[in-house]
Image (cartoon, rainbow, N blue to C red; front, top):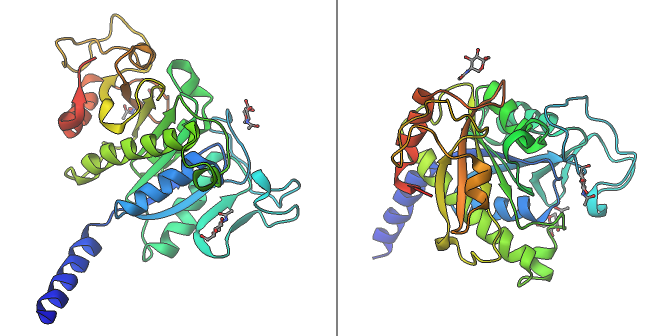
Length: 303
Ligand SMILES: *[C@@H]1O[C@H](CO)[C@@H](O)[C@H](O)[C@H]1NC(C)=O
Ligand SMILES: *[C@@H]1O[C@H](CO)[C@@H](O)[C@H](O)[C@H]1NC(C)=O
Ligand SMILES: *[C@@H]1O[C@H](CO)[C@@H](O)[C@H](O)[C@H]1NC(C)=O
């Protein structure tokens, strides 16, 4: 009996060691916000091998800006590191939690180029998760979004990625998750992080390549005010920018996908998934949309 348990444990370990995808987690709101820490917890619970690399402070709206990380001249957000802290640093009791005192692009770059090889046996990560962001990034907002900027940077470095943004969110500390477990912010953070896992589990289990090169996904979650459990939500394939003359992939009886703004604004708990070009942050052609549609078909619905 003991021997069987040992063999089973070894097999389980071998299988998970073989299949655990490696993930760099980033955002633009900063390393200590509740949303990104809830996502980190959820990714770890789901068995992913995760390193968090985020800006030291709120860098919302900085798009694809980049600069060399600098020594802190203000404390990290929520006083999580003092003035004078080094340009990059980590939580002394958990070195997988890292800040980078620069833009989201620099934080994800540090995660991919420096941290991933250190934690993932010399390898690049399998995937980059950016967000969830505090607030939606819909339509032309993607152009200034640091969350989308970081996901784009990953794709341009050859790492498949997705940006996630959430309607019900405030820029509160990760400590809220434990000090106020029944607050709106905590409950929303838990729902959104669970939804991201639902999408990532399907995407990362799909055959290689995880996504076509040079593209990324822009995922937006609606408010949790009338959508109070994960099971209430449905993912819908969308486009970022309205273009009535575009011929998109055929799905839900049309070859012109609904815009993400229209879908997230509807009642019915719809989350949008748009496929975008990481260089232009604009919609991709029907053939590229079709690749993503095929991969995510099992979780996509019509609005
Ligand atoms: C974060 O930065 C954005 C853009 O500058 C700003 O709108 C937002 O209020 C900031 N959040 C906090 C909590 O300071
Ligand atoms: C650092 O990690 C410890 C142990 O997990 C935790 O208690 C603490 O809140 C963390 N601090 C930050 C800023 O991540
Ligand atoms: C992205 O856009 C650029 C510029 O229009 C184009 O050259 C490239 O082929 C596009 N990439 C994808 C994957 O659509």
